[in-house]
Amino acid sequence: MSHPILELLPEGTTVDADGTLRFGGCRVDDLAREFGTPAIVVDEGALRARAREYRTELTSRWPKARVVFASKSFPATAVQRVMVEEGLGLDVAGGGEILGALRAGVDPALLVLHGNAKSTEELQIAVDAGLGLVVVDNADDVDRLEQLVPAGRTQDVLVRIIPEVESSTHPHVQTGQVGSKFGLTIPAAKELIARIEASPKLSMRGVHAHVGSQIMDPSELAAAVAPLAALGTFPVYDLGGGLGARYTYDEHPATVAEYVEALLAAAREHLPADAELIIEPGRSMVNDSAMTLYSVTTVKRDARTFVAVDGGMGDNLEVALFAQRYEAALAGRLDEEATEDVVVVGRHCESGDVLIDPLQLPEVHVGDLLAVPATGAYTHTMANNYNGYRRPPVVFVHDGQARAVIRRETWDDLFDRDL
Image 1 (cartoon, rainbow, N blue to C red):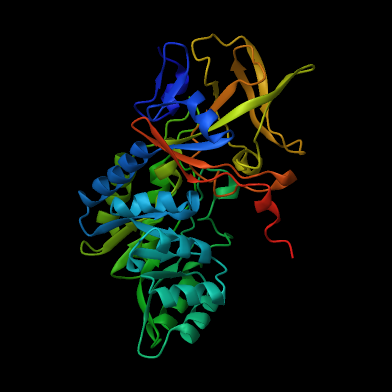
Image 2 (cartoon, rainbow, N blue to C red):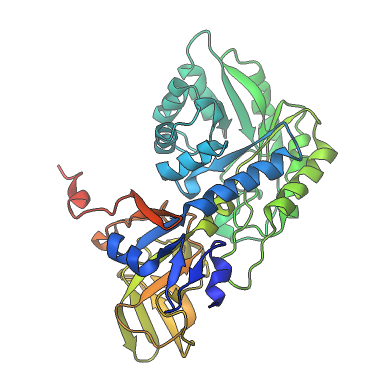
């Protein structure tokens, strides 16, 4: 039995004879009974396969290279641990992500710290842990590091530049354009590089650029390479991440191989052949391996047909932040034809809490399970407690076995910080 939703789910996802989705070898109705809904469910095999694909595609073409997973896209210790076990480094963007990465067992030398407003505390954590690279975004980073790095030691750093690349993505996830809050213009970067090269506490290792997120055309990402090269010859060039993921039937982002080849074609033209290259995939690394499973709580057929689920912007802010489009299907009734146009809405007290509008589904009933594919990136990351919402669990599935790697919050968790 086939259904279009399978296009957006990991290879090996199937539909049983009764129309029920089987994800990672597990029936979704069994998952709902064991772990409740909403739940973010991750196909661990697909996650590992993607990590291996990235590592192989890059290092087979440019041996002195490494893949560093952008942890902010899915900063669960279990996800970070998978990346470490598959031979990847981790990109971290704050104290919590550093500590999570260390819990995951990463070699601190394989960590790359980002952030446009790093605190003294976070930089102290980084220095104490012996992080491999700190990406300097401003002169204040340099001031703090020179105070924190002990005498007799040096901290390897990269300088983040603004490559002046206008990407064709939503303005909220553009980062490489003039006026971005991230990085430095070329003249300012040159001044800071000169200062770092004269510092006894810092070692100038290279430069970094990032164009944006959810970018379908890899040529836009490759356009950042030439501006990096213009700053000089360095041991390390960090080309960032940004490759788009597929959310809808109509979207067709570049493959990992196409993305890597576009970057390396620019690298061969502009960069030293013996330089180390770093890429930092996040969204495209994790998004396709996960789905969110909801239960339908109400169906209101009035001016429009509203299908309300037991989650929403508390577990998925992507729609509210930059109008991300999703697809979905009734996970226990995939053998039925769609008969009505609906709006899938969340449970939160905001008019903007709309998950999918419009969507065609079979006639929906309270208690139906709704599967939303492509929710591995930035859902768990930005989950919140609005309206007293308890953040959902993260469940790994593989070969018919399921295990929670993050439990659902309890009511007591909501009040643990009260004094």
